[in-house]
Length: 318
Image 1 (cartoon, rainbow, N blue to C red):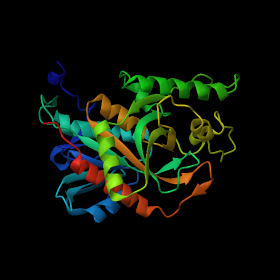
Image 2 (cartoon, rainbow, N blue to C red):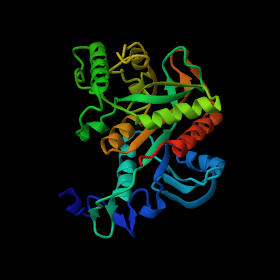
Image 3 (cartoon, rainbow, N blue to C red):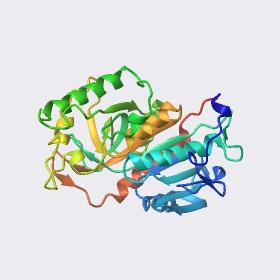
Image 4 (spheres, rainbow, N blue to C red):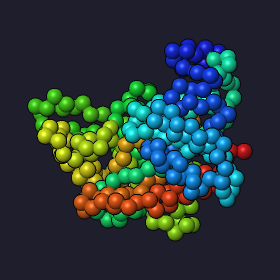
């Protein structure tokens, strides 16, 4: 049985009662988590919103601060994911291990707590009518990275299968027949936990902060992966952002709104485990308008405010 399995030290390294990369003990992790890409964004959000800080750890480029929110006293952890899904895969596995595994016995607990994670990050808008600074609340997500492909789970719902196939066919249709990568880009789709999405929308509306609900695409990089032709190496998929913006997703009321680098695996992996996860990212550039907002600090504050209040008010099962 799964609960009796003993985890090897080489599979799950534990040093002085702490997971290897995050350098955290189980009791140092809150069950409500804000996850960000930039390690400097961890103290930025903590200083703005936390009244107390019980844990402040910086290890292997990963910063974690656990403390209590000023207004509510709610215990939260703010954690770096790093850039991209490969780094996030490490962080999420260690978060789950901290919650589910008894480090003394080396076995999985028979019962463990619910975890809720909301990603607060930045993103690029790909629809011409999306203003800079708009918060995009992710409903569905499609990963153009391959991290999720190493975890075999069923589709969240039928719409995931449809949008996944439409994006795969559209991308493959523009790759030249003589390309070595023709037919080799395989997107994977998932969906945010709807309780989290609803809570995020409710709080954004309540605070009067401009937002849109949409589909997010996560890329495995920032440049060619998102259609930016900066290097001298030809792109496998030219104009990736424009291509995605034009796709009919067949999901009523939802367009592909933004691109970033972490949402796909967060929603796919945590959803497969039965945990709650959501994503809220301000648009700091618009690829259709060729605009970029260099000063976006306030929009990160807005997204963090919405996320923290969504964590506080989101209903827990009885």
